[in-house]
Length: 102
Image 1 (cartoon, one colour):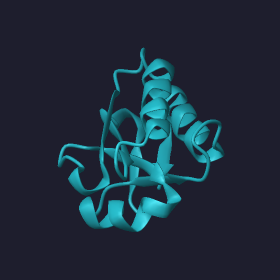
Image 2 (image 1 turned 90 degrees about the horizontal axis):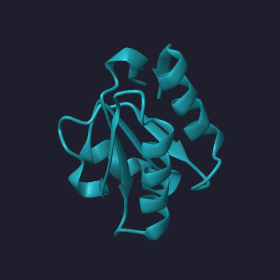
Image 3 (image 1 turned 45 degrees about the vertical axis):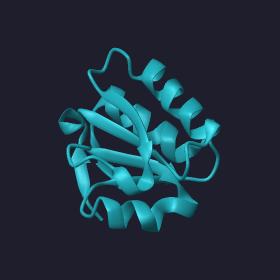
Image 4 (image 1 turned 90 degrees about the vertical axis):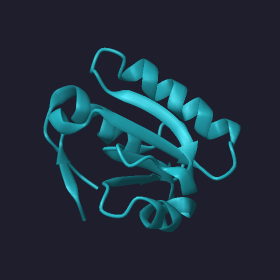
């Protein structure tokens, strides 16, 4: 699995299937949590992940499609849209430094 140092994370993508409201809400929450970190958070369809994404966050049900759309990029799959431990770990790694193994 690819890993990335927190200082190298500049663009985080929340990938969704078809503009689900819950993933838009997660992207908004991440923007607020990371507002002072210098990380840009964007929301895109899972099949249109931009090449300049550093980390992809998506529901575990979309993980295979996200890997196909952005091969080699660190991927953080989650089970629940708000309060998922994988997303909390990502936010803490970005804020506190360290390496994200995703």
